[in-house]
Amino acid sequence: MPSAASRQEPVTERFAQHCFVQACRGLPHDRVPVWFMRQAGRSLPEYRAVRGSGSILDAIKDPDLATEITLQPVRRYGVDAAILFSDIVVPVHAVGFGVTVTPGVGPEVQHPFRSASDLQRLRPLDPETDTPYVLETVRLLVDELKVPLIGFAGAPFTVAAYLIEGRPSRDYLLAKSLMFNAEKLWHGLLDRLADLAIASLQSQVECGAVAVQLFDSWAGALSAEQYKRYVAPHSEKVFEALATSGVPRIHFGVNTSELLNLLAAVGADVVGIDWRVRIDDARARLGDAVALQGNLDPAAVVAGVGPALAGTREVLAANGGHPSHIFNLGHGVVPQCDPDVLSEVVRVVHDEGKVGSLTHAPQ
Ligand code: 1CP
Image 1: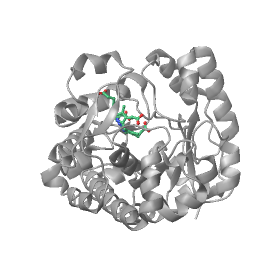
Image 2 (image 1 turned 135 degrees about the horizontal axis):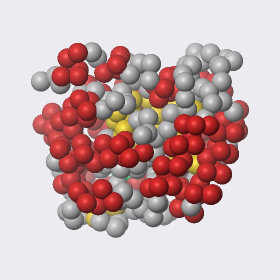
Image 3 (image 1 turned 30 degrees about the vertical axis):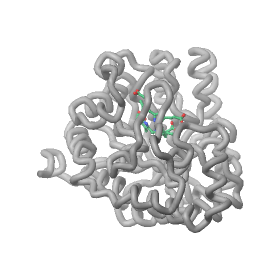
Image 4 (image 1 turned 180 degrees about the horizontal axis):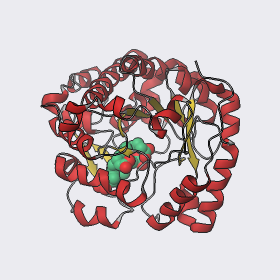
């Protein structure tokens, strides 16, 4: 059943002139849009109040709860976009790979990916039957939200890293060993993960997500040559499949200063950058064809209102009023963050973030 809002007007049209969408496209708009990766979640007292103690995967399976958690930061901060409350391991969990998310640790896999026979544990995702709760949450949100909803998926490399390592890792030794020693199997795995991301993202867009973000959080572990050979074809497949949807496609990774051109070249409309690279340097490298998202250090927010606002003003100054900027942190909000500091960051971005006119129209 289409929702009330989607019956009235296609949601992408409803938000076509919104500052977030305009900034993704590098088109003129009235204020610098701001949202935060991991804006929902553990730093918010209202999240802890409704969340309970079970697995996050159970919370995601409850559309009313997931809707409420998605809306909480939008209400509190007045951010210009919502991000669906879900997780990058939801599709692999839903097809029965055997992934859990352990509180305080992150994704864990009981039987990590080791050999060709494990490919059988990654059947295709049918979003309508495998993740109906995600689609219901998106539909509920589209009815409620006055700002665009960002759908997301984990990029093939970052999800593969969890499936092979079996838990969060610092050095990805097991994942890289498989990559170097069993290239055919590696590509088989990433191809299936690309298909899962495509199915998930397309279904989120069909239900009303206005933009999508592909999280390749751990791509910074790779050299440019490794990224090109082992990862780029698969992320490119995801971006290509989403091209016809017409929604802005955001590509994000941490520690990817040396990979920015490649992250753009696989087909992103927006590249997320962390705090290690200045926005003006990133733009000099990438040109005006892509927008940039970022890049306040989350540690500056934890440090307090002084460092957070100084860092916010530095980011705005480095962007210099360019219309192709979406303000964000360089990575997700951390649990230690004081929500009042983030409120101040939003206030300063909205009060002081000036959007100048575009000198070179993007293609
Ligand atoms: O129960 C809990 O509260 C556990 C913490 C938590 C939360 C709030 C996890 C486990 N996932 C989430 C939600 C989540 N995950 C969101 C929606 C919330 C929002 O952004 O507002 C999103 C976008 C993600 C995406 C995600 N999950 C990423 C990419 C973003 C990033 O931070 O790099 C990654 C790497 C994960 C894996 C994951 N899931 C959970 C944790 C603690 C982790 C990271 C573990 C690690 O360090 O490797």
